[in-house]
Image: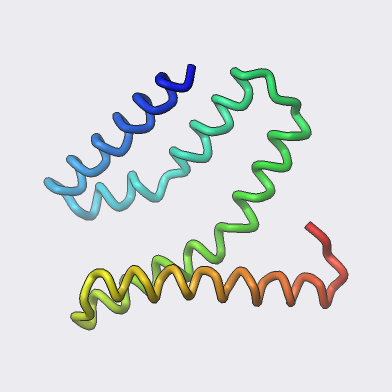
Length: 114
C-alpha cells in the first residue's frame, strides 16, 4: 500500500511538472487543483479511516488554504521582482508561518478553537 501511494504521488508530480515545462500557465492551473488533498482523502477512505477523521483532515486543508495563498503570492512577487529563487521560497515559507500564526490569533479572539 505504501509503495502505491509513493508511485501515484510521483506520477502526479511528474505529470504536472512536465506539463508546466511545456505550458507553464496550464501547469500552474493543474498544480492549483487540490490533487494532493483529494488523493489523500481517497487513501484515507481506502484505508478505512472514519468519516470524522476525514472531516478533520478536510478542515485542516481549509484552514491551511489562506496561508498557502499568501505563501504563493509572496513567492510570485519576489520572483517577479528578480529575487533569487531560494530567497523567494524562504520568504514564502516564512510568510506562510506568520500568516498561520496571525490566523490562529484572530480565530482565538472570536473564541474559535480548531
